[in-house]
Image (cartoon, rainbow, N blue to C red):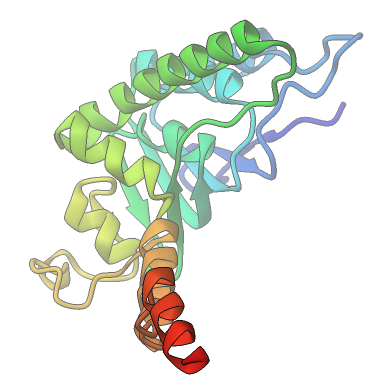
Length: 233
Protein backbone atom coordinates (compact mmCIF):
# COMPACT_ATOMS: atom_id res chain seq x y z
CA UNK A 1 0.00 0.00 0.00
CA UNK A 2 1.59 3.25 -1.15
CA UNK A 3 1.33 6.10 1.34
CA UNK A 4 2.72 9.61 1.54
CA UNK A 5 3.77 8.97 5.16
CA UNK A 6 6.01 6.41 6.81
CA UNK A 7 6.39 5.55 10.49
CA UNK A 8 9.65 4.21 11.91
CA UNK A 9 10.99 3.78 15.43
CA UNK A 10 14.39 4.87 16.68
CA UNK A 11 15.82 1.71 18.23
CA UNK A 12 18.06 3.65 20.62
CA UNK A 13 15.49 6.07 22.03
CA UNK A 14 12.32 4.16 21.12
CA UNK A 15 10.97 7.46 19.81
CA UNK A 16 8.44 7.26 17.01
CA UNK A 17 9.46 9.07 13.85
CA UNK A 18 7.12 10.06 11.04
CA UNK A 19 8.43 10.83 7.56
CA UNK A 20 6.21 12.92 5.28
CA UNK A 21 7.77 12.83 1.83
CA UNK A 22 6.57 13.66 -1.67
CA UNK A 23 3.21 15.11 -2.60
CA UNK A 24 0.52 15.10 0.08
CA UNK A 25 -2.58 13.46 -1.31
CA UNK A 26 -5.29 10.96 -0.67
CA UNK A 27 -3.95 8.61 -3.32
CA UNK A 28 -6.54 5.85 -3.35
CA UNK A 29 -9.76 6.85 -5.07
CA UNK A 30 -11.59 3.51 -5.06
CA UNK A 31 -10.08 1.13 -2.49
CA UNK A 32 -9.71 4.07 -0.07
CA UNK A 33 -6.51 2.52 1.28
CA UNK A 34 -4.88 5.86 2.01
CA UNK A 35 -7.25 7.94 4.10
CA UNK A 36 -7.07 10.37 7.02
CA UNK A 37 -8.68 7.63 9.09
CA UNK A 38 -5.81 5.27 8.30
CA UNK A 39 -3.29 7.96 9.22
CA UNK A 40 -5.12 8.63 12.47
CA UNK A 41 -5.09 4.92 13.36
CA UNK A 42 -1.32 4.79 12.92
CA UNK A 43 -0.79 8.04 14.81
CA UNK A 44 -2.83 6.84 17.78
CA UNK A 45 -1.49 3.29 17.75
CA UNK A 46 1.12 4.30 20.34
CA UNK A 47 1.85 7.20 22.66
CA UNK A 48 4.74 9.44 23.65
CA UNK A 49 6.48 12.28 21.83
CA UNK A 50 6.97 12.01 18.06
CA UNK A 51 9.24 13.63 15.50
CA UNK A 52 7.83 14.52 12.08
CA UNK A 53 10.37 14.90 9.27
CA UNK A 54 8.98 16.89 6.33
CA UNK A 55 10.33 17.02 2.79
CA UNK A 56 7.34 17.79 0.61
CA UNK A 57 6.31 20.22 -2.14
CA UNK A 58 2.78 20.20 -0.75
CA UNK A 59 -0.37 18.88 -2.34
CA UNK A 60 -3.97 18.41 -1.25
CA UNK A 61 -4.88 21.16 1.22
CA UNK A 62 -7.74 19.15 2.74
CA UNK A 63 -5.50 16.17 3.49
CA UNK A 64 -2.91 18.56 4.92
CA UNK A 65 -5.54 20.23 7.10
CA UNK A 66 -6.62 16.88 8.50
CA UNK A 67 -3.03 15.88 9.31
CA UNK A 68 -2.48 19.29 10.91
CA UNK A 69 -5.55 18.81 13.12
CA UNK A 70 -4.47 15.30 14.17
CA UNK A 71 -0.99 16.47 15.12
CA UNK A 72 -2.35 19.51 16.97
CA UNK A 73 -4.70 17.23 18.90
CA UNK A 74 -1.97 14.68 19.69
CA UNK A 75 -1.51 14.65 23.50
CA UNK A 76 2.31 14.45 23.48
CA UNK A 77 4.96 16.78 22.05
CA UNK A 78 5.32 16.93 18.27
CA UNK A 79 8.71 18.00 16.95
CA UNK A 80 8.68 19.00 13.28
CA UNK A 81 11.96 18.81 11.38
CA UNK A 82 12.17 20.31 7.89
CA UNK A 83 15.16 18.73 6.23
CA UNK A 84 14.40 19.57 2.61
CA UNK A 85 11.37 21.65 1.72
CA UNK A 86 8.02 22.35 3.33
CA UNK A 87 6.07 24.12 0.62
CA UNK A 88 2.42 24.94 0.13
CA UNK A 89 0.22 22.46 2.05
CA UNK A 90 3.29 20.92 3.70
CA UNK A 91 4.02 24.24 5.40
CA UNK A 92 0.57 24.05 7.01
CA UNK A 93 1.39 20.64 8.52
CA UNK A 94 4.67 22.06 9.82
CA UNK A 95 2.73 24.63 11.84
CA UNK A 96 1.42 21.79 14.06
CA UNK A 97 4.82 21.28 15.65
CA UNK A 98 5.29 21.99 19.33
CA UNK A 99 8.80 22.83 18.15
CA UNK A 100 9.65 23.43 14.50
CA UNK A 101 13.27 22.96 13.47
CA UNK A 102 14.73 23.70 10.05
CA UNK A 103 17.95 22.55 8.48
CA UNK A 104 20.18 25.49 7.52
CA UNK A 105 19.85 24.32 3.90
CA UNK A 106 16.08 23.76 3.89
CA UNK A 107 13.31 25.98 2.52
CA UNK A 108 9.73 26.86 3.34
CA UNK A 109 7.25 28.29 0.85
CA UNK A 110 3.78 29.74 1.37
CA UNK A 111 1.38 30.84 -1.35
CA UNK A 112 -2.28 31.22 -2.19
CA UNK A 113 -4.35 28.05 -2.66
CA UNK A 114 -4.90 26.88 -6.23
CA UNK A 115 -7.73 25.11 -8.01
CA UNK A 116 -9.05 24.31 -11.47
CA UNK A 117 -12.51 25.53 -12.38
CA UNK A 118 -14.69 25.64 -15.46
CA UNK A 119 -18.15 26.88 -16.20
CA UNK A 120 -20.02 30.15 -16.45
CA UNK A 121 -19.35 33.36 -14.55
CA UNK A 122 -21.33 32.15 -11.52
CA UNK A 123 -19.15 29.06 -11.30
CA UNK A 124 -16.04 31.26 -11.48
CA UNK A 125 -17.36 33.49 -8.68
CA UNK A 126 -18.04 30.45 -6.52
CA UNK A 127 -14.53 29.16 -7.18
CA UNK A 128 -13.05 32.52 -6.15
CA UNK A 129 -15.13 32.59 -2.97
CA UNK A 130 -14.06 29.05 -2.15
CA UNK A 131 -10.37 29.92 -2.63
CA UNK A 132 -10.77 33.00 -0.44
CA UNK A 133 -12.19 30.86 2.37
CA UNK A 134 -9.45 28.23 1.98
CA UNK A 135 -6.87 31.00 2.19
CA UNK A 136 -8.41 32.29 5.41
CA UNK A 137 -8.31 28.81 6.93
CA UNK A 138 -4.62 28.46 6.02
CA UNK A 139 -3.87 31.87 7.53
CA UNK A 140 -5.41 30.59 10.76
CA UNK A 141 -2.63 28.01 11.10
CA UNK A 142 0.13 30.50 10.22
CA UNK A 143 -1.28 33.09 12.62
CA UNK A 144 -1.39 30.66 15.55
CA UNK A 145 2.26 29.69 15.03
CA UNK A 146 3.85 33.01 14.07
CA UNK A 147 1.68 35.60 15.82
CA UNK A 148 1.89 37.75 12.69
CA UNK A 149 -1.02 39.87 11.51
CA UNK A 150 -3.42 38.28 9.04
CA UNK A 151 -2.83 41.14 6.60
CA UNK A 152 0.92 40.55 6.49
CA UNK A 153 0.45 36.80 6.16
CA UNK A 154 -1.99 37.38 3.29
CA UNK A 155 0.56 39.58 1.52
CA UNK A 156 3.26 36.92 1.94
CA UNK A 157 0.93 34.34 0.42
CA UNK A 158 -0.02 36.67 -2.44
CA UNK A 159 3.65 37.07 -3.32
CA UNK A 160 4.44 33.30 -3.17
CA UNK A 161 7.14 33.74 -0.53
CA UNK A 162 10.14 31.41 -0.20
CA UNK A 163 12.06 31.47 3.09
CA UNK A 164 15.34 29.97 4.13
CA UNK A 165 15.79 28.88 7.73
CA UNK A 166 16.94 32.28 8.99
CA UNK A 167 14.00 34.12 7.47
CA UNK A 168 11.54 31.50 8.73
CA UNK A 169 13.03 31.88 12.21
CA UNK A 170 12.78 35.66 12.00
CA UNK A 171 9.12 35.54 10.99
CA UNK A 172 8.21 32.86 13.52
CA UNK A 173 7.54 29.99 11.12
CA UNK A 174 10.21 27.91 12.87
CA UNK A 175 11.69 27.88 16.36
CA UNK A 176 15.32 26.94 15.77
CA UNK A 177 17.90 26.11 13.12
CA UNK A 178 19.42 22.65 13.24
CA UNK A 179 23.11 21.92 13.83
CA UNK A 180 23.59 25.20 15.69
CA UNK A 181 23.83 25.61 19.45
CA UNK A 182 21.02 27.69 20.90
CA UNK A 183 23.52 30.41 21.81
CA UNK A 184 24.39 30.71 18.11
CA UNK A 185 20.80 31.07 16.90
CA UNK A 186 20.58 34.32 14.91
CA UNK A 187 18.87 37.18 16.72
CA UNK A 188 18.82 39.61 13.82
CA UNK A 189 17.72 39.12 10.19
CA UNK A 190 20.85 40.70 8.71
CA UNK A 191 21.57 37.81 6.37
CA UNK A 192 18.07 36.32 6.18
CA UNK A 193 16.47 35.78 2.83
CA UNK A 194 13.01 35.87 1.33
CA UNK A 195 12.20 35.17 -2.29
CA UNK A 196 9.00 36.74 -3.55
CA UNK A 197 7.86 35.92 -7.07
CA UNK A 198 5.92 39.17 -7.24
CA UNK A 199 8.90 41.19 -6.03
CA UNK A 200 11.15 39.62 -8.68
CA UNK A 201 8.58 40.28 -11.40
CA UNK A 202 8.18 43.91 -10.35
CA UNK A 203 11.96 44.35 -10.18
CA UNK A 204 12.38 43.05 -13.74
CA UNK A 205 9.56 45.26 -15.01
CA UNK A 206 11.16 48.31 -13.37
CA UNK A 207 14.47 47.52 -15.07
CA UNK A 208 12.80 47.13 -18.46
CA UNK A 209 10.89 50.38 -18.07
CA UNK A 210 14.10 52.19 -17.08
CA UNK A 211 15.83 50.97 -20.26
CA UNK A 212 12.99 51.89 -22.60
CA UNK A 213 13.75 54.93 -24.76
CA UNK A 214 11.91 58.09 -23.88
CA UNK A 215 8.86 58.60 -26.11
CA UNK A 216 9.42 61.02 -28.95
CA UNK A 217 7.32 64.17 -28.90
CA UNK A 218 4.25 63.83 -31.05
CA UNK A 219 3.09 66.35 -33.64
CA UNK A 220 -0.53 67.38 -33.79
CA UNK A 221 -2.42 66.75 -37.02
CA UNK A 222 -3.41 70.42 -37.18
CA UNK A 223 0.27 71.46 -37.10
CA UNK A 224 1.06 69.05 -39.96
CA UNK A 225 -1.80 70.49 -42.02
CA UNK A 226 -0.45 74.02 -41.47
CA UNK A 227 3.03 72.93 -42.63
CA UNK A 228 1.62 71.28 -45.74
CA UNK A 229 -0.35 74.42 -46.53
CA UNK A 230 2.84 76.50 -46.32
CA UNK A 231 4.64 74.12 -48.68
CA UNK A 232 1.90 74.48 -51.27
CA UNK A 233 2.35 78.25 -51.23
